[in-house]
Image (cartoon, rainbow, N blue to C red):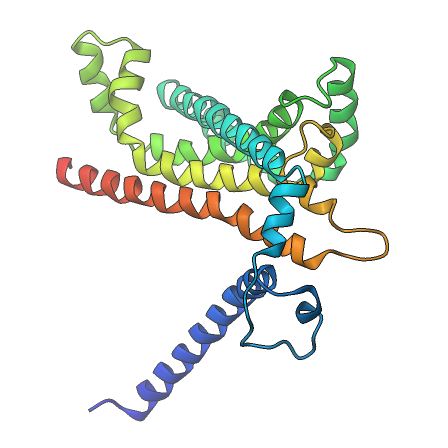
Amino acid sequence: MVSKSKWWFRILRAAALAALLFWTLAPVYIVLSNSFRRTLDIKKMPPELVFKPILLHFQRLLELDDFLKYFINSIVISLSVTIITLGLGTLAAYGMKLFKTRMGERLSNFLLVGKLVPAITILIPLYVMLNRIHLTGTYLGPILAHAAMGLPFITWLMTSFVWDIPVETLESACIEGCSRMRTFWHIVFPMLTPALASAAILIMQSSWNELLFSLQLTNINTYPLTVGIARYVGAISVDWGKCSAAATMSMVPIIAAGFFMQKYLVAGMTAGAVKG
């Protein structure tokens, strides 16, 4: 029979999980429901839980605005940042593995110091540099900025995974005649599938949701979704219906990427366990 203390512990744990779930899902529900409500219904207090859904906000968003252009711009920027950051970060971690020294171990931990610096402190010098080489208002400007902000963290993350690879595996590949780069592409890279899936989700989400650098380094032709949605907030009023519809549609790619990467993440972990 379950003791009274364990019974109370289970109740408290269930209550804490329910509160955390409500805290997480309530904002998502508000955005989703507002995207299907009439403008007058959005402003009702208290809000109605049962309402007749409409698609007017999505129709206005797709037909009257440049939402699709913002959407494509975000895809181009976030995918480019993900590829660049993962490629350079993994190669840097692999280099630290090959030339493992005490300085290299300290450097991998020192990389996290860059995450402690507020992004706004480097915005002005970064803008000046990119403006002098005429990269503001282009795709390359925010791509370089996002990659520079995410590369230290991804390098540190991949380093912890690369250093777990046995040295004997790399040495046996060299004995078989593989060069260091061939060893990386044919042996190390496949073994890092779980780590690459996790890192890809993190860096893609960070670039997709970034606003500060995108706001300053892009123009009307290269605005991503974050800047495009921010334009729906006026000085006097806010178009909550259009903002909610845009936010709802912007959730879809990241959620889809998460589910897609999750499949490869589980497959990679299982394959590694079987081979080990």
